Image 1 (cartoon, rainbow, N blue to C red):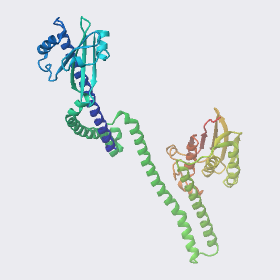
Image 2: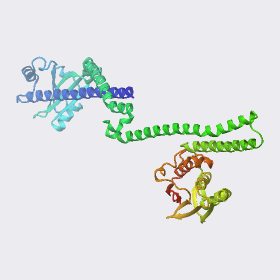
Image 3: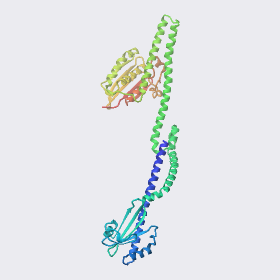
Image 4: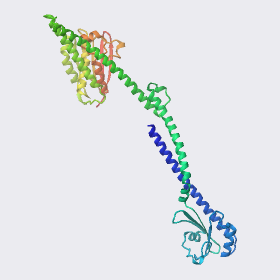
Length: 450
């Protein structure tokens, strides 16, 4: 980036220096040209101011008195007198009798029309220009004074060494300034990059504040995500150890013949139970990893929230009877846009969680309805409830309010984390109300898409 900025600075500086010098040369040349024409105008007016008859003799005398040998400017001034018919009466630089009629010369024609005229003609070599000024005299003749001077190309050529020296000096100065400016411009950005945690305390450009805040939030999110992944890996490892230890221990006893009769059946039952828990944990972990993918494809379609909730209730009815919990369904048809598999998981996990943390003789009520035009799913239970200090954490991975109860029911601690991901993917809102000993009420409000 520094090199690119330096290159751009140098290019702009070089361009600016070249254009400036060229413009100055053009301006100075125009001033120079205007000065020559002003001098010629002055010569002509002084020649005509004598009031004497225009003749070869009087022109020679006037020319000698005004300009000396060369017009006082280092270059000879040529004087020509042209009568009203365009015939050359006198010319200080050539034989007037041999000269062509000058009536068609632009400066002469302009003098006849306007009283005075001027023109500039370039030499074939482009090294010199001839400047002409004409003045209409009282007797109807035209007095023309002319002088040669360097052309703009000749001036530029002669000034080229000095211009190149100036350009080189300017480029050297610009090179130094570009490095200094680049370093100054990028210093706040480099400080910001070197210390992401102290962005709020650093002095940065006002225009970069939104960008810096975004980077800071992303930086914090990355750190938080890294911590969560590390914690998740640690928790997964810990959760896998328990069922694997049970399976390994009991299978070793059976392999070594240290179990007999009823012990083999009991050990096999424990191995089967731990294997089931292990499989559930692996499935939940894989599912959670799938939901963690930011750019995952979600297939939204029209669903009936009531039908999905009713199917989940029917599937879990047997487990509810085993736990002596009454599971019921309320509400009516409730259409929404969503991913069918995700919504099924969401309802199932909420209902399953309500059953796992319930009491004998308790109840779970699932209902669907519209509230202010938005589809709403509600799962209420009369279970053990959640303490106030734990309510903000129950959607964290592997967080359990009652760890012993969770393990006895086969819970992985990932069900509500999956629910949270599904809610976020559908831009829905989840609200929890709970009181220890009286139960939990979870409400999911989906977006109004109709």
